[in-house]
Length: 305
Image 1 (cartoon, rainbow, N blue to C red):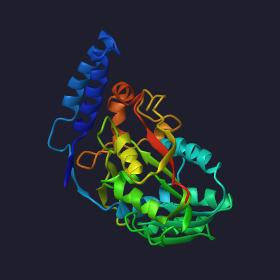
Image 2: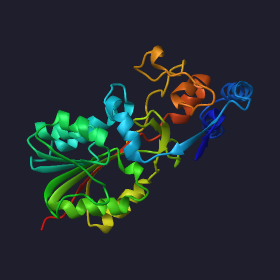
Image 3: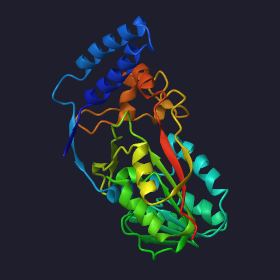
């Protein structure tokens, strides 16, 4: 069980913002405003009605509930990730491509359009249903990243997008990718980065029954991927780690490109949606997130025989 209190998030943002000021990024006026805002927040969220206990749920259950809305526009992570991954894919010849943790099949569809024979694997039946609708020619099946249901050396390309943050250790999963790749094959990975520093982003999603839960999410260091890859003799072809270069939210706490009406409301006693909390401290939110790594993209290659 996890206990989430809105102040744990909001004061955390204020703390990071103040640390940036302590390091010389901001002036006295900024610090004074943050301290005054903290006093207001302590009064605003004072009382036993704030905070909520939430259960942990398997990633597959969370993604089952997320599947119908996962592809909705305005996801900054996907908007940044897709062009980077597809730029790598555009340089690879068609072959047999495995989309591991394929989700809704957004990369599967792109691979199929580029002439690849696509195999998609995911642990979420809800995601697989959406993926099959997008790519009728693909072969989709339920499976786990630690035990891919395909033979040794059977694919030319493995793509794994925004999924490895759900496993505690990337090394055994990379070993499984290498097992199924042919000599000279390519591995393209994208993954989300930590919320702040090495603190993993909590992902709260409702399952098909509408019950919210926290999916497992881990903060992997860049060296975690690299150490695992070097042990497997994978060759690094490319590594990209874009950072947040624009304001995370506006002065009303709304992400760029979203309408104010899309902002959820904070409901006391329910798991606090962080997007509902940013309006209580928009300046601190922007200061805390600016320059933080958003995601990481790797291109590895298996040595030729």
